[in-house]
Length: 211
Image 1 (cartoon, rainbow, N blue to C red):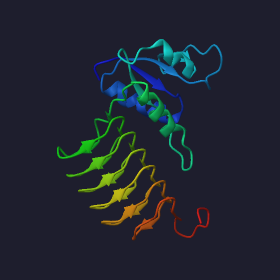
Image 2 (cartoon, one colour):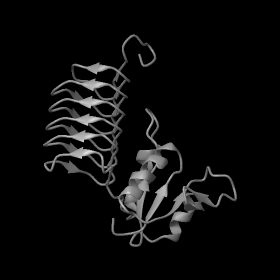
Image 3 (cartoon, helix red, strand yellow):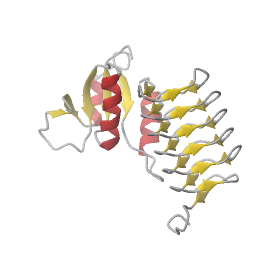
Image 4 (spheres, rainbow, N blue to C red):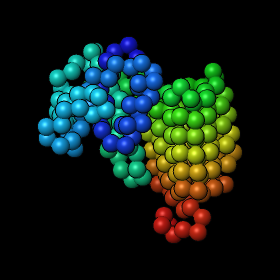
């Protein structure tokens, strides 16, 4: 990161990203979050600047942005924020925790976030604004689409392909060569043994919550 960084969002996901930024020596100059109590001065040692309206004070050529909104199934705020601010010329650096294990033969899209303990094997392609969360495993030759969330402990076996907006829940497993369609959801702990269509949902074992 060659420019100072602004965090957009100040919740739990932001706290994890702040650790990555510190470990990578980034200059974080502030956080934007309308949810902070009025008069809040500092968050994790950086200045609280106010709500999203303050972003207009910063020209896209002078700062990079970090999309610190979390990703929950069915919630589009994170993806909409990325699309909106990218269209305005802002850049989102790729963030990789120093304790992630990445092959030299991978591709990471703009704004990808790779957390501690994640493993990305040769031939992986990760789309923009995708989260590869703590200890997730992306095996060889997987193609992960934009705006995905591969949750903590999830495993994508070799040759898996996911389209836009896919959510793979914590400790779920996607078996080799399976394709997952746009905005589909694989529930926590589930095993995806066959293709899942767009907007499809695979429930976790012994649960009707996602059926």
